[in-house]
Picture 1 (cartoon, one colour):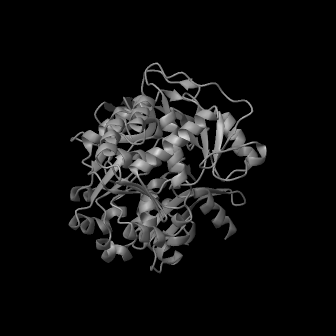
Picture 2 (cartoon, helix red, strand yellow; picture 1 turned 90 degrees about the vertical axis):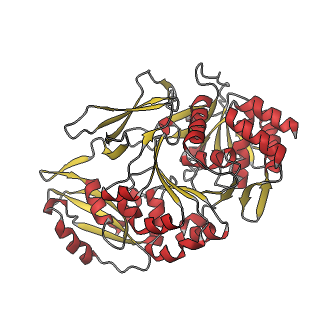
Length: 499
C-alpha cells in the first residue's frame, strides 16, 4: 500500500488531496470510493487499478507534461483513467463525442494532445494500443512534454469554453489553481466525509472535476450516472433515492429538469445533505416551491459562481429565507485568496466583474494572460453586506423594433408562472415582414396542463414589446439538454422551425 501512496504524492503536487488519500488508504482502505451499475471499487482497488493504468500510459510513451484527449462517457473506466493521468502527471481534456472519427483526431491534434484515449474500438485499425481499460492512439505528430508552469506548476486538466464570447478557447488549469480551489473549499464548506456524490456532468464541463476530485478529497463515494439515464428525469430521481445520494451539484436548468412540484411530498425519500448550484443565474422562482421542504429536512442549498477561467467556482452563498425577497439568489462573497471588483460602474452600482486571485487561470492555451486579472463579462453588483449579485451577461440588452429588451427579464417572468419549469427566449428576424419577434421555448412541468393561450394571457402583464410572439411547449421529460448540463438552445430553435 505504501508504494501507491508514495507514487501519488510524487506525481500530483496536490498536497491536500495527498494527505486525505494517505489517511484513508492507511485507516480505511476498504471504504467504497466508486459505484458504477453493479460494480463497486474500494479506495485500495481504485488506486491499484489507476496506478497500473498510469504505468501502461508511461510504457506507451505518454509521460509527465503530456496532454491526453479522453474519448469516453461517464463510467468507472473514465474515472480510473482520470486518476491514472493525475498519477502520471499527464493532463487531460474531454473530446466532443458527437463528432466523427476524423474530427476527434483533429480536435486532439488542435488541442496539442500527444494521444487519444478511447473506450470504443473506432481507432483500433489506426494502430491504437490496447490497455487494461480501453485503448490509446499515439497521434502522428505527437507533441513534446510541457515543462511545468514557472508559477503554477504542472497542468492538471484543460476545459474547452463554450465560446459565448467568440471562438471557443482552451483553459488549462494547473496545480496552483486547483490546490487553491481545494483549500478554499476546505475553509468555506463543512462537507462531511463519507457522503455519496453523484457524477452527473460530462467531462467537457468543469463541474465534473468538482464531482470527481471533490468526492476524493472528502473521502466520499462517487456514484456514476450513466449517460442514457440522464435523458429521463424519473431515472435520475430513482438513482438519487436508491443510491442514497447526499451530495449533488446541478445547474438551475438541471434542477428544474429533475425536480418538479409533484416531488414535494417525495423529497423525504431522498438522503440529500447539500445541493450546490452553478453555471447559470439562479432565480428565486426556481427554488421557491422547494425551499421550505428542503429547509425542514436540513438540506443546505448553496448558490455558487465561477467561470472555468477561475477553476470551477470561486464564491458561494447559502440560500436563506430572506433571499426570496429579491428576484435572484446572490452569488456570495469571493473565497479566500480571491478578490472581486467591478469595472465600468453604472449609476445603479452594477459593473463588469473582474476576478483576481489564486484560482484565476494563467491564460488561454497559447495565449498567456497579463496581471490585470480576468474580466468575466458578467454584469454584477455588490450589496452593503459585501455579497455579489449576478445580473446578466455584458451586452444582454437587445434592440427589437426600436425597443430595448432584456431577454432574461422575459425568461424570469415566464418562469414565475405556475407550471413553467424553464423558459428560453430568443430573437427571430422575420425577413418577409421586415421585423423581429421574440420566440420562447417553455419547459412544462410533469403533470401540468399548460397551453400557449394560458401563457399569452399571463404575458399581458408585460409591456407589449416584451411579449413573445411564438411559443414552443415542451414536456419536462422531452426538454433538450446539452453535454454541459444546460439547455440545448439550438435544439429548441430547430424544433420551433420544424413546428
